[in-house]
Image (cartoon, rainbow, N blue to C red):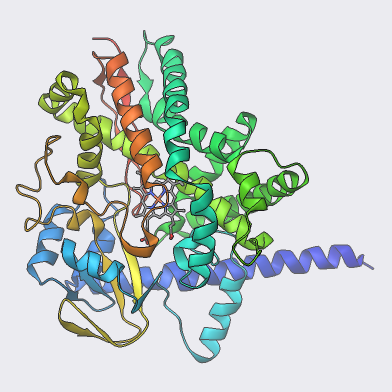
Length: 447
Ligand code: HEM
C-alpha cells in the first residue's frame, strides 16, 4: 500500500497541474482566441494585442486608435491613447487596477479554484499592483517609508561604483564583441536592487534567472509551453523568497528587507508572511525587470540618434532629461489595464461597471496634443518628463526615483567610458509584449 506521504504528494502534484492547466485556459488561451477572432474582424484592441507581439512599436495602430476617439470602445475593452484621458483613468477612484475575465456560476467557481492556487506573481493579490485601498495604502506606506527618496540619493555613489566595475569587466574583453544587455544592462539594476534589499551577491544570478523567466507573466496569449515555464519560474521564486525571508526574520540586518520584516504601521501592525513575500517579491522583480529595458532602449536610441548623443556629451547636465525622453519614446511598460468598479464617466462618456479600460502608456507618451513632433527623439525637450512611463495615480511606480537615477548613471557612464561604442549586427528585441526592451545588443567597444 502506498504511504500517505506519497499519496499526498501525488494529490498535490495532480492538483497543481490541473490548476495550472485551467489558469492557462482561462487566462491565456481563451482570451487569445477571442482577441484573434476580433482582430480578424478589424477590432482595434484585438489588433493591438496581436501587433504588440512584434519587435516594433505599433505606431500606426496607435494613430488609428487615437483617431477613433479619446476613449475607443472595442469589443472587449475601452482603449485610450490620449495622455489626459490615461491620467484621468489612472487617477480615478471608480476603477481598480488589474483585469480579469471572471465567469459566473460553475465556470466562475472553477476559475476561482484555479487562480487561488496561482504562485506568487506581480499580478496575484496581495501584490501592490493589484490591490486597492485600504490594503494598498497600508502596504504602500510600509514600503514607501523604507524606500525613501533620501535612500535613493544615498545610493547614487554606490550605483556609480557598480557601473564602473561592470564596465571594467567589459573593458577587459574589449577586443571582442560583447552583448550589452547580458553583460551590462541586466547586471546593473539587479546588483543595485539586490544590495538595497540585502540579497547576497551569490544569489544574484539565481534571482536574475527567476526574473527573466517570469517576465512574460504580464502578457496575454502565452503558449502552454511558455506559460508552464513562467509558472515554474514563479513557483521557484516564491519558494526561494520564502526561505530567504525566513532567514532575514531570524537574523535581521540593516537592509530594506530587514526593515520591511520589522516595519509596523501606526497601529503596530506589520505585514503578514504572504503580504511580505508578495511586496518584497514585487519590489525585487520590478527593481530590475524594467530598468534593464530603460538602459537597453536608451543605448539603442542614442546610437540611432548620434546628434543627440553628441549633444549630451557636450552638455552632460542634459542627462536627466535625456532619461525622461528615452522613457517617453520607448517606455519599458507598453500599457496597463483597469476595471471599472461602478458606473462612471471617462472623457465625458458613460462607462459601465465591469468595463475594462486599457491605458496605452506608450501611445499617450506620443500624444501630439501634449508633445510637439512626438515621434522625434529630442533630449532637450522641455516637457519630456510629462510622460506616463511610470503610470500615474496611486499605483505610480514606487521605484521611479531609483529607475531615473540608475538610468542616468548607467547610460552616462557607458558612453563616457566607451565613446567609440558601436552596435553590431544581431540586435534582437525581447519577445515579451508588455515589458519592452532588447534581448541582445551586440556591440564593439572600440572603433
Ligand atoms: C524604468 C524602470 C521602471 C518603469 C518603466 C516602471 C514602470 C512602472 C509602472 C508603469 C507601474 C504601474 C503599473 C500600473 O499602474 O498598473 C509601476 C509600479 C511599480 N513599480 Fe515600477 N517601473 C520601473 C522601475 C521600478 C523599480 C526600480 C522599482 C523598485 C523599487 C519599481 C517598483 C514598482 C512597484 C513596487 C510598483 C507597484 C506600485 C503600486 O502598485 O502601488 N519599479 N512601475
